[in-house]
Figure 1 (cartoon, rainbow, N blue to C red):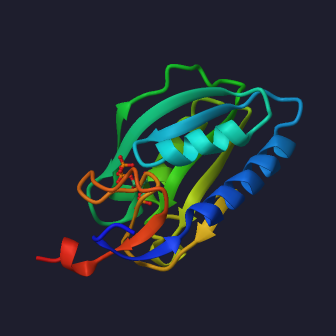
Figure 2 (cartoon, protein in one colour):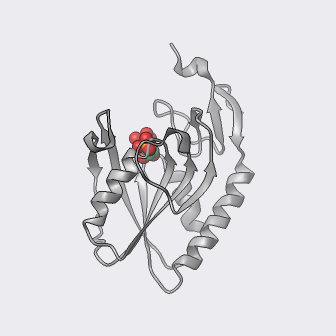
Length: 179
Ligand code: PRP
């Protein structure tokens, strides 16, 4: 285990098993369709790569980088699109892949924006869900693990851009982010 980690929250084995289960569920959902699977940079890259490799449905992939800007209520937050899709999603079945839903502001605003482009369907799969922290009314259709309100790193998730390549999800030691 990394010396900055307090403990491993979700092991490599647990992630691998859950990713396979999710991929099988998604294959069933998209049977006879060709979904566009969208990776939300950067946190979801590792989950995305493992998920799509386990899916048997004929998929296409695309990437987006967004962040929600500002504080306060949901309606005052603004979605900043740092990198947009290159695919026209009108009439497409779109699957958004996220690493974590925290306040929900990012996904709430992203979903609202993508809906205006008239996809045939729009579903969200997140590896981690922290429902305790929710501010915006958003519920992912598929989720890997529900976690408590702890600072997590690894498997794509960072603290100050570090730790994304850890193969497990761990709780970061308080001493690293306090001070
Ligand atoms: C994280 C995560 C979600 C968002 C969740 O991204 O990937 O997009 O924050 O937070 P919310 O539910 O409170 O809106 P981040 O902005 O840290 O970027 P990164 O994926 O590049 O690390």
